[in-house]
Length: 342
Image (cartoon, rainbow, N blue to C red; front, top):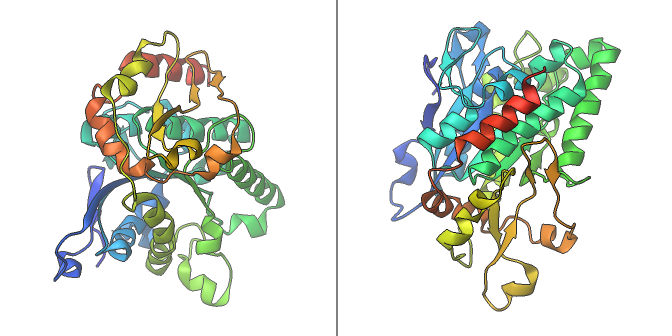
């Protein structure tokens, strides 16, 4: 069953209720998928859509009852998306109306996870790699400030990587930077998961060609379904119920609002030192300052190995005790500083 072209986004996607027949209870989760035409599920020249988020919800059922909100802005690059984080309306090249990611998080949340895939259009328009990375980090940062963990998708392959040497090098370099960032290399905080799209939907001839449209740029319906299916195991590990609930204290969740000049997003993670005793230790997330510097906490690999178990499970509770997500003035000041001169 294909999703119909959506005039306004985000579009709600969910698994058919028949998949839950006989299931007494399922863990309910909400996921935002955000990106360009490859997130929208564009195929057949834009006359039909098969968003990977629909297949993702189907594969996760019935253990997880996931509502996917899909915003795929056709023809837009991540740099433009980052400039319009808080815009209530964004028109794509097919005259479909979407919204800035911060606006969606604030008005249609809470969400347990955000999945971001983009960069194809930026590469096509010759945007320098540092600007693309900066925009991707801003999109993820907007989610973190709303208390929503993220998964980063690498830029999908396309026919350009086999025809143009310069484009292929930029594509490989960009995906290398995304992978290094998501793996925690350097002082910038990382998404909860990195997903290599090329491994899930390889580009090539023979059977691989069936996963792609003739334009060599968009997935075929089979390709979108394969992407959603392959992504499911990653998402399930992030959304599954935590074995041990984490306590939320309202004063801890709102202390970041008292820090002048910084956009702080405290994250309650269970530290290795306190896990045996059942305590919950607040671990502040490294975050962006309004002056475009990063608030780097001391590196602790054991803390990273503790991973994000329970982080997705508490995002809804954190959203309720935070003051309707972030104060808008600090976020707007950061965005204007980062992108006003681009």
